Length: 478
Ligand code: URA
Image (tube, rainbow, N blue to C red; front, side, top):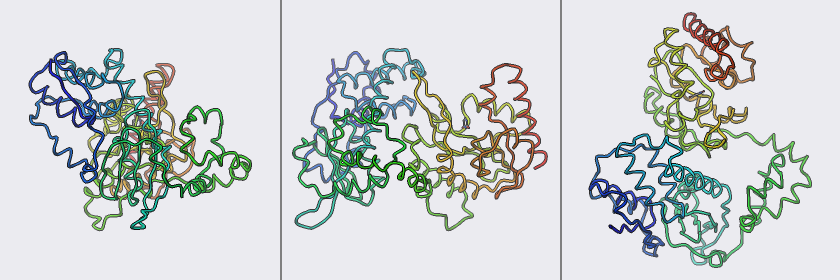
């Protein structure tokens, strides 16, 4: 039996796992254990994660290929507190590379089922931490420098997973997030991790509670206040670290007035996540690359929280035809490419019948993240709201500035709403060319998913035929 001691980080497991895999060491021969020396030291304050990662590059590089999805999820699972998680991850890695390439699809397999449930639990905890961490302003007594600090108690060991999110969001502030497991420091340039601290040591100064209360009052959405749901979502133990819970009672008192006011102020938009407009507009490819990269960081609306990634448009940047759908679905969310699932397959078939070559068109979506709700093991599609569609529109506007299509085809009401800027009835809007800021050949037709949802094979066949006809009309007249 080999004893493999992991220093608590996923990178450390990954390095060792690669090496064992390279040497074909079977899972049952390894005794994985936490070495507990990842608590950090003062010395570590001066080291970046990148530096540590470089130090721990694998000695061997394995020739085995594993799905990126496994690695991404495994990193999240590694934050679970089950001491058996490293063994579980290696067992799955072994199976994926030894004849079970589709293991992740076998949700009833005991390893996969445990892996999936740990993934969900940790993801939820990450989501909570992003929502509930509250910083307080602190002042260095010697230098007078201002920095921010927060104490938080996550269920799992997620500091390293969530700290990069705060580094992006509060990039220009110096801050630390302290937990009992581990602490993260951001100095506006690099992230550093050190040992955890008990709460009693974390709270030494108290200047900003009132700031938080003011901030919370201004973002408070009375329409969302359901006290029972709130205490379920936000268990009492979080309340102690949230100064704004003290002001909720007061805020509720003048709720109706606030409600009015709130909707007027609430205009989420992806605008602030857009990269600056390019100085050399002729370089379409690099503009598009920057745009696509920036979309991965977008948090304009809440959808991104549960999505795996932003799914950006794809296709030739000089395409004459752009087709816009509603939002990525389950498979698109996993693969990072539009129209890859059942609706995409139906669209491919319809395009072929209409004589349109998919490789010559640019395909995109009105909303770039997958909005879903869980139902058992399934991720059920949820229609994006009008606010979410308009929040996401800046990405589409930039895509259109680059591509400048001659023909623009909207699949379904959400896409049409984004493009035409108003809610429409599909039946009224299809069968005619609309004039928009991009082209007077803007068309609206049914979304392939709507065809898949129709109840009888006959209606399905009719609707499909109409889709093909609509596509033909759009390209014939365009
Ligand atoms: N439905 C869409 O609207 N877009 C996709 O990318 C997939 C399904």
